[in-house]
Length: 165
Image 1 (cartoon, rainbow, N blue to C red):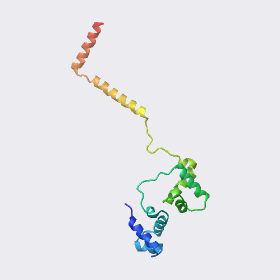
Image 2 (image 1 turned 30 degrees about the horizontal axis):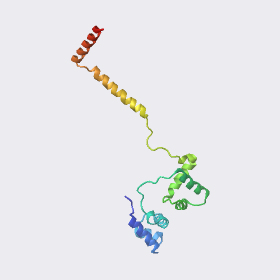
Image 3 (image 1 turned 30 degrees about the vertical axis):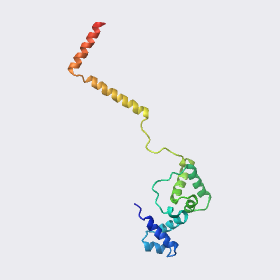
Image 4 (image 1 turned 90 degrees about the horizontal axis):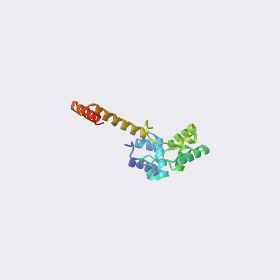
């Protein structure tokens, strides 16, 4: 659960917009941990409206071209992470910092789409082969475990077949 509800954030933001006080005063009045938090809420509200204060329930997937454009924009301009985030409609400026560090470390390959999940240790054909050999070995074990009566019948049938030849 989020530490601050949407209603609480709206109350703080509207208090600021109505001129009830600055960042420091509202931080102390409403018991918010840091003034930077209040500052972020206000800038998010100014840029995105009420949606800027809502918590996102799902992760947004950005294309590699979009990430590259954002990083190049940051590197070629004198703007801060927050300003670039507002320019591109991102609510999380630290995302740009992570993209930039990945870009510096791996280059353009940092944004290549990779399959998610664990790498399979065996291919599908190996799995099928393993299953068939397992069932074969189980059937062979069953054949070896004949009752004495079944073994006697098999022996008689072999003898009978040999005499017919």
